[in-house]
Length: 442
Image 1 (spheres, rainbow, N blue to C red):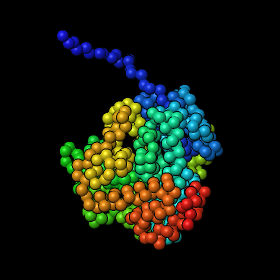
Image 2: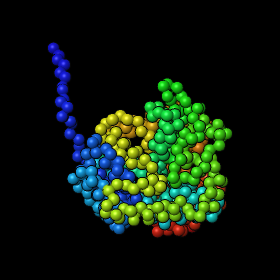
Image 3: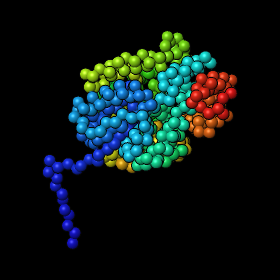
Image 4: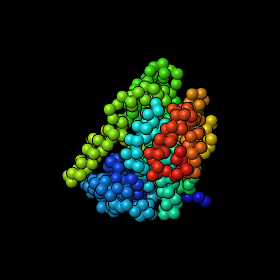
């Protein structure tokens, strides 16, 4: 005989949450208060009792970390907050590790933006020649962090925002054994733009691509795909991308909503000219914004992120980060767009290709959702070309291979020409010699 027993939990009873340790690597970033705000907003579902904020720049760490402490304390946090320059101390025993590093600082970013323009190429921190050089500096450092995680916090999840996020995820997911997801605020902003456009938030969608090379291919409302009724305003405009609208005829040729980063591909010459005409690069503008933010962060009376942080370009990234952690920690089986191994979700991509796609998030991590109708020839061709570039870039960064570095630049749709690829590589490698193996030098 079998008996069914129903358990009743009185209203005052709640299942105890796991006490968690967070490590933020690159915590001297002016973005950190955005992330701390996200933790505060989710404190009822995520019981973080330890925050270890790590950075190599002690001065910025103390200033930004000081604001983080004030923000948490103002909301009643009584746990442990540690500011450290010891990476192992931060990682050891962590449950969730958030990486937002910038190898070489803003000075290196500005060089990444300026040097390619000398050769008529786009200078941008995640795309083209600029993104390539940032990847070459960052991959070895992130792999070192991954090795430390394997040893000191093998059960931890790494949530990476460090750019170029997609190439970093490609390197770590295929060359380490850590648990990680790649994260970007791009889709969160696109989703908000679509919701505003259709006047409601309860819609389904299909999204595929690579980081900063992505499209929404369907928007379903009450069982109907309304994609064709959405105009170019359905996408999101981001602070760090020049305000260039997509032409209606361009959108008709691409039956999907492209992320705004695709303007670098669709309107390449216009974007290059915009950069050439600008009085300052985006990196130089960010230096000004960061200087102003740091001064505000010093104010002992400031206990929340200032509105000016929105100008920095990281809109809603704490929403993407902390909501993803919430879904993993609390086994929510929620849908999020993150960077993961393809594993058959997009038929024309290899299983080990890291793609940016709609996933189901739970305590086991992210499971990619199979794309229903991915056969858009333009998307297929561009994704495969840029993925080949990413894989060659990872190979060049790991092996210090000059031939793979040149091959990566030649295959990138924004470069393509050998003479330009060689010239920009030689110039950038020389400027970044302190961060790269000598085998890459001309």
